[in-house]
Figure (cartoon, one colour):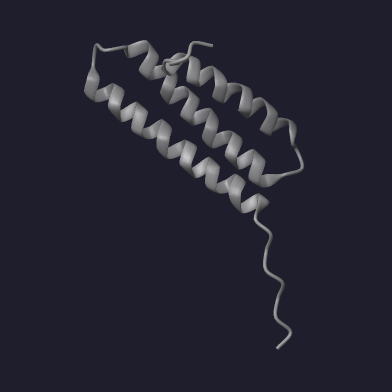
Length: 89
């Protein structure tokens, strides 16, 4: 992996994460995050295909990838955050 990876290399990294999350079949949060990250990886692959030919469209795909990644991060964070105990009062 290059020190400064391009969109294609980042998509490959996301694909690896998606595979690991999909292996966790019993966890709905992992499956939801995997779906979002797969969409982000596809957006990054679109950016890699477009290169610098269409900057506005490339930026749209990059923004989409970032939004999907942030949503996936939220799914995974809610999975790992302990839920507060219900108050008996």
